[in-house]
Amino acid sequence: MSSNDNDNNDNGGGGSGDKISSMLESGKEYADKAKEQYSGFSSQIGSLRASLKQGVKASVHATNDALAKAEETTIELRKPIAQGLKTMEYEGSKGIAVVWKAHARRHEFGPHIVGGSALLVGALVGLRRGRIPGVVTAAVAGGLAYAFAYEPFPLQDIPDLVFGNKKE
Image (cartoon, rainbow, N blue to C red; front, side, top):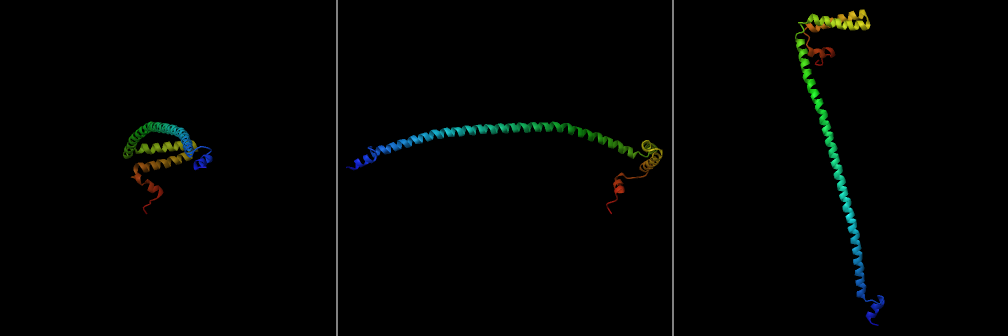
């Protein structure tokens, strides 16, 4: 027997070249199948990435819209509040100016201030508690009104007089 006969017998009757070529053919078929499967898989991944990107873009857009609406609402709320505060500041400054002028001219209206304070406070306490407490309270209120109207009583020193001087 020759060596070709041994090869033919070992290979089932075919030559070694046939076996190699059949192996190459089966390898190519396997590679082609793998490419088809991979290309299908990569296209699925590509579509998944595209849909994920679209989802992220949509959520970012929705978040930006919500934040823009929240900012607009905040601005719309702040405008009336700021306008109201400006109005209150303006009217308050006018009121403080009137009170300050009245305080500066308090000597001209001394009897009116003392009598009005005594009458108002005494009447309120008298209606609530009775005649005697009303008369006593009216006398105290009149005395305090007299002290504030006629005595040089600096308003900035009132906290020190009430709570004690902290400079000691």
